[in-house]
Image (cartoon, rainbow, N blue to C red; front, side):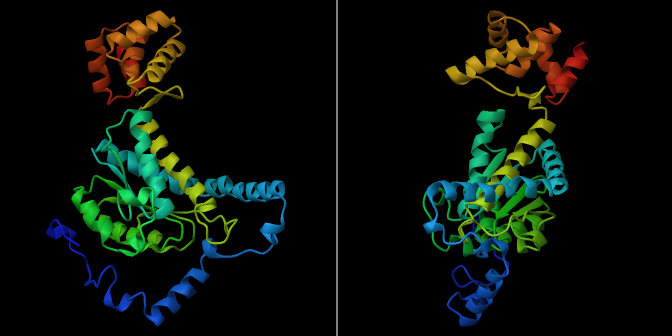
Length: 333
């Protein structure tokens, strides 16, 4: 592996992706790993549902749905941890920092998905929220064998991104023991970045490394070991909260509506007109005219329409209010 700078140097001598003592072919290592997996809720098997292949399809639907219903309640139990992470991420954003997800397999794809949806949803720069997955871009669509076992890879990628103490790194791992994620979180802590861990097992290895552990236990999966199921659903709910709620804190919404939006296609233009009209009470034509005067910015069009300010004055007021529409309205009223 080529290391782009001295900061990326691994913290231990390696033989391939493992330390010499961690050779995966070692019987001692395999025995230890089997024992470790046996203690994880996400790897446990349950026989209470009987043989699934003998159930009717409608019964399978009911059984799987019943398992999925455990997820929201389990997430709710960790509301305080999630809120702490949201506040930390928001503060990093305000200092000019970024949110960077790291994960492998399903967990990595969920981070990549959430990052990719932030620009069209909240009008953010693509560099503000980033998703890194073990094995790189190819792993988003196809499994890359053994990529998750490379403890140094995430640190190298974070180094290449120029990670600083202003950034947040969120490690996602259902098992909570993925070497790729552990190594990335260790690197991030060494830099001084805020670190958050999302795991589906208690007392997880990534939770021990991160400053803010979010450990949400939902029990054995519907199909034993298939952590793209309840664990994946849990991860999706949590990352939705981390970005959506931090964006609310940054003023990306107004009265429960996304307003940091710039129309880049026909659908978004129609949505923008509707948003301005509904939030201000003006007609469609007036809303469209306001958007044109605001160069397509919904937030600026709203401020101009609500306060009667011209574009330049409204733009200055928004800048002075750090982009928070409610505060800008108050300053011009």
